[in-house]
Amino acid sequence: MAPKYQQVADALRADILDGVYEKRMLLPTEQLLCQRFRVSRQTVRQALSVLASEGMIERRQGSGSHILQTRESLNAPRRTVAVITTYISNYIFPSILREIENVLSTNNSAPTLYATQNQVSNERRILQSLLDGDLPDGILVEGTKTGLPNPNLDLYRKLISRGVPMVFMHGIYPELSDCLSVLDDNYGGGRQLVEYLYGKGHRSISGIFKNDDLQGLQRYAGYADALRDLGLPLEDQRVFWYNTESKERLLSDNSFLDLTSGILHNCTALVCYNDEIASRMVSLLLSQGVRIPDEIAVVSFDNSPYSELSILPITSLSHGEYNVGRMAAELLIGLFKGQSGKSLLAPWTLVTRKTS
Image (cartoon, rainbow, N blue to C red; front, side, top):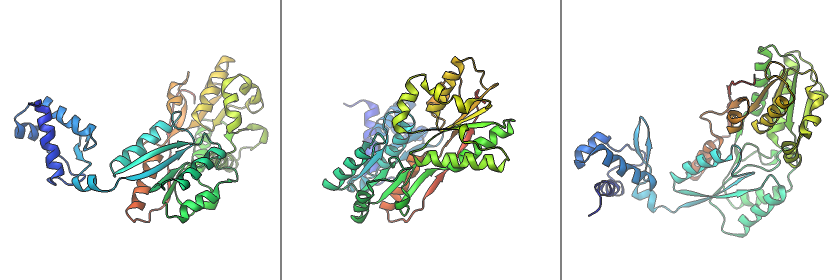
């Protein structure tokens, strides 16, 4: 005979598949389940864990167990979604992909992951492989080097012409602006960081930005406009630009400090393109005896693990509950259901730490 928790799980699974509960409904409380099956709370929790591992339910602390799958949803054809991002396993991408998978799995859809490494040649191979094989039901894509002209627009247009719904994340090509997108409010974030530093008394604010991605250009635009509007000088020598190809070298040796020495001269605050760059700068500055934030304050974007695990935790802009991956996946599911949808901007919330 099966263990009691397995018997409870089997009975609840049968109820779900027989239509006793509808999708998104709540299962009875643990107390009621204990009474129904005449078992302990520990046994009920084991049974619910089994159903959660099967994707039948989602357990949420404080709100109970939500039904995710019904007979109708299980019998429906499973959709395939191509998820194309620049990277997969580093920086903020694990959390983005995790949220995408959560949304897709609860809507009878499965992701196939592709990474371009922010190289347009890789992007082209991926797009061509999608056209040559079985077309996916939908595409979630983070554009490659969106700050530059893109040579792969022809393949994107072919996919669109063949009826494949598409949602862009983080950056979008201007030529494909009719597609839905979920973007960071990069311009607003650039302004927000400068205004925060100004409020802390800083009047000489330098910046480090990435010039081959739309995010970097927009963050710079917000930074520059805020300086102008606050009556602060915007001087070219106070801004350092880098790109995808130069990033690894900058992060791996001490030349970064030499290259950025010009923007650091007489500055009291530094706006960094992201936490990875900020973490490296904090480490290099501290190694040179620079007191942070007393001599130079450092702020950044993304509130990634880098911001928390840096030698000095970094003040950084966070999306909080507004996960771009989840928002984009929900837009795509809406397209599957015939909804028109609209493009979204993910707002920022500032998380202040020791570097400012």
